[in-house]
Image (tube, rainbow over the protein chains, first blue to last red):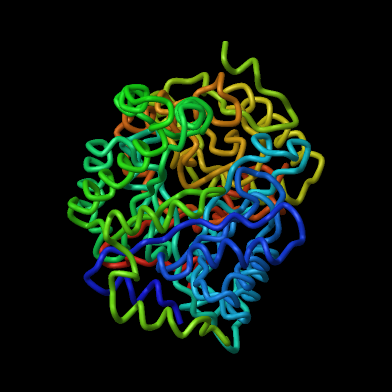
Length: 318
Length: 175
């Protein structure tokens, strides 16, 4: 059963993070990252060939994370699999006890390390969410064949409040919720007023009654990372004020300033009605997650009940 | 012109060459009726005529909309901007990689086809169409005539509305 679902039903802000599987076949790489995150987050997304770069499969890494006592959110994209492979991996994940899935369209292969590969996109992110809900709630696959034992994952998705066309962004999330999404994680929020406007649209559409919103955030560690985020990441909007603030401190203080900015942003987004928690993106910098959760005073470590569950370690036999 | 970047092999956002309001009005010329349905049935019984007809459809829709002949035309629900020209062929709206200025993440020199679709649908008073849930395409229909499929009534379940009465429509049509 999904502890993330239970945490979102509680009153405290929820924290999720990201665990990027390794480029190789080393299970210990997953175990180490899981140990860094365990106890500080309610669940961690295990990414699926993130940025269209080949890595250990999200299903395998999710199972490794689970064995290491970290609740995974298995990401699955439409980029590399047709509808048959997507359904079979979803069913496989359920059989192995993966409690949460996050379904998305995925980055185009032309942006990653295998630009020569064939993009699949047999389904889009909305249709994949719809297919997952059909497997779970209707108990049939996309061919209409009945399932014996149904999967029971908690279904999530993503949305980018800052990408054009802005007017469609809340409506697109409403479509994903109609398709079956129960929680959403957003792209990085650096522009809090822009995020608040999107949240107002989301509430207006009644989305927050059926879907928990986790605001995406992350620490900027260096001016180089700032340049990368503001110019190279598709669909990401970083206001100039962020750059001014990071350039305004001595070079050896940039990382600290980035952490402070992240913690401040967490408090700002949690004050917006309808926001249930934060999704901290710090791939390759997983140690920062505990620091941020501690400074912001959020996450399972602040919750005696969830904290006790965490002590029991891995509890996902299936 | 932007559309010159389009190649036959890979989808790239296409800016339609016909104004949105005009094409919504022109749809009446092709609207399904008994005559067209009989024509469609006749074409399907005559493979050579079907091929000619499909070739004519391909040429006209390629020129106007960058049509890729998926055979399951979404144009009437997307501001007559073709979602199959999206590099990810997304039928339910834009991906999260569109730049704040509306550029495609895969072909940054082009405007995202869903940005174009949103503008065209709004201009023509069809903004609500973009909320329709689009079902997955039937990949057997590629290179078939979407007009014949439409006249034969096979397109009726391509998309479905969700609202308070039916907040979670079924993925499988007719269930």
